[in-house]
Length: 173
Image (cartoon, rainbow, N blue to C red; front, side, top):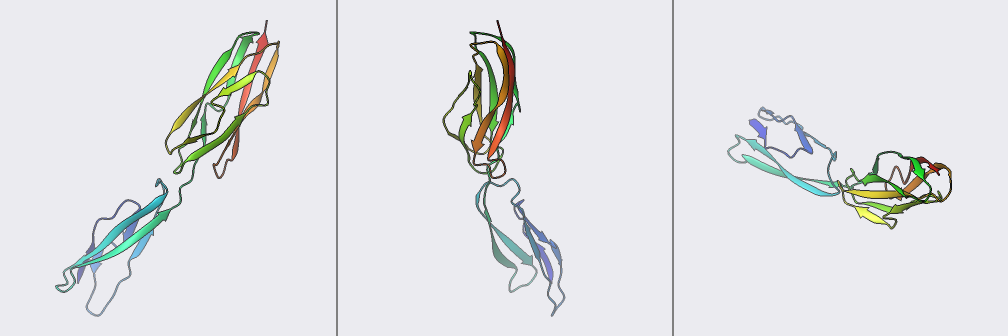
């Protein structure tokens, strides 16, 4: 019996892809699945065993993969340096928060704890997979001194629930 398998989606591998099965014999097929790069959800495929058997030349088998997506936070640049800023003026830097993950990223809040630094947007927002949100960080010093601190970005990223973006600069007259 000559056997070969139909094409399968990239997330599904079947080995061996073809071969011969002698009369009275059998062979095992190994199926492998990879969720790499797939968004959360259900994926289905039909593996068709095609043969020269006159009675069963096309034997379909359904395969289902359930993927649980995961959000992933990325920040660029990783820090913000305002340099020298005159007292009474405003300097701004833009930080891009993105989601290279496979499920929605919910940014719950961005806080500073640093005087004279504000962010916009400062309310929670959601990024779909592949999306980016620019966040404007403003430094408006009212007295001379050194800026040293960080933005804290809280999200639903399962392995980085909170990340820090270091801030630097100095206020001069």
